[in-house]
Length: 80
Image (cartoon, rainbow, N blue to C red; front, side, top):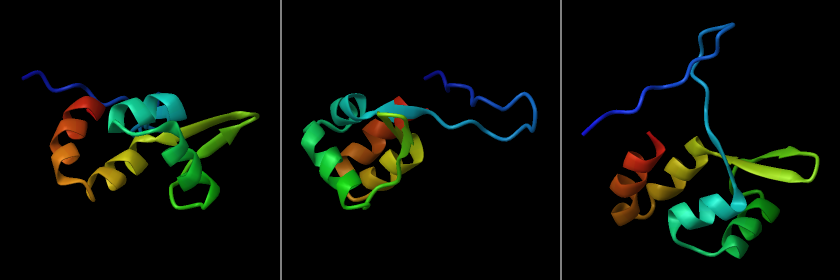
């Protein structure tokens, strides 16, 4: 198994995080888009809003996967 390299900021050296759209996050977690829209509306998951575009950081998806053990390992491989 090939481990994906982490991306680093060229200026400060900190690791860069990936951000996913609601649609992509729903596909990764195998659930509906409305589920994520409800989490965002209720402020139960972290997100970033750029204009009208809403992105969910991969760290939030990993936190959510901790509550679903079967998805935890599978999602870990995808998000690396």
